[in-house]
Image (tube, rainbow, N blue to C red; front, side, top):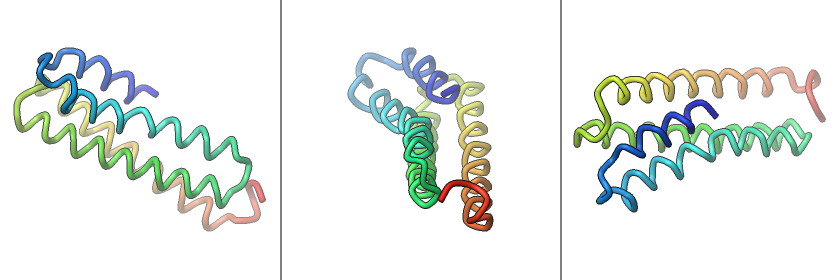
Length: 111
């Protein structure tokens, strides 16, 4: 949720000409990260949760790509771009770690 909030804040400063370009793309890739984690968890099945975590991981990578493009065309401030890149990296590591733990400990959480 914090990353999606940050993306909304940063992208609101993009030029109006990017409203349907990078602004929309970054927002559409940031929101599903948290949404897929929540939806997968809410399904109450480990295998389904893992599937949704992989989808969230994909959205995180998509956000990372859009953010890098925005940085290369000098849309966000450099500090903001670095913050997004760092958050995406940490988020990706957290998701992969959680997926590995759920795959290894099949009998410890959900059915």
